[in-house]
Amino acid sequence: MRWFVRGDIDGFFALALDNLVQLLLIDGLCRFVLGFSEELVYGRILPGVALSLVVGNLFYAYQARKLAEATGRDDVCALPYGINTVSLFAHVFLVMLPAKLAAQAAGADDATAADLAWKAGLVACLGSGLIEFAGAFVAEKLRKYTPRAALLSTLSGIALGFISLGFLFRTFAHPLVGLSTLAVILLAFFGGVRFKGGLSGGMIALTLGTALAW
Image (tube, rainbow, N blue to C red):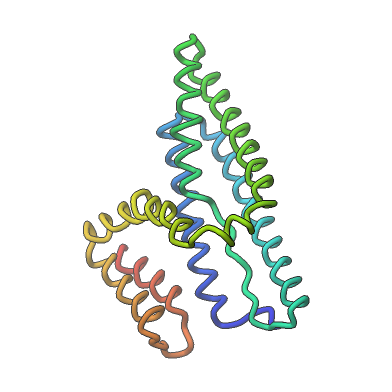
């Protein structure tokens, strides 16, 4: 099995850019919505996220390698591991922010309330992880007997409402940057256009967008 193919370049830039946006989102929500200190955000939260991304992607790569060996295929691609945007918003606005407000209402100072909110988020992450672990034993049966449209409808609705619309508005707010990079993505991934020198569409879009923004 080949360890590296041309498509990995596009995959790398797509996953790296997506996780970069998520890290910036975590930074903004933690500091400006939850009021966390920079020491907590940059000393514990973001390093923990970075470590999970490294470990998660390495484990997914290991799983892909084992699947390739078991099936004798040489075209197995590892799943991308990243931050769940929906869970991020849910943990911030449905767990951590209410916990902070409740602590402040009980008379806690801002620092103590922020610390309690962070700990509440950790407990929520552990709880959701246990639920996902338990669901792994029945997921295949659910997938087998449930129509795919029913499985994906909620996910697609959340993706459109919470993820896509914000970036769509930004695209038209800065049309030179947004539409130019969108054109490159459409040409590369849907139009089948091959750029000179074997350059990946994702790298070109990222470079072009950065240059135009500056």
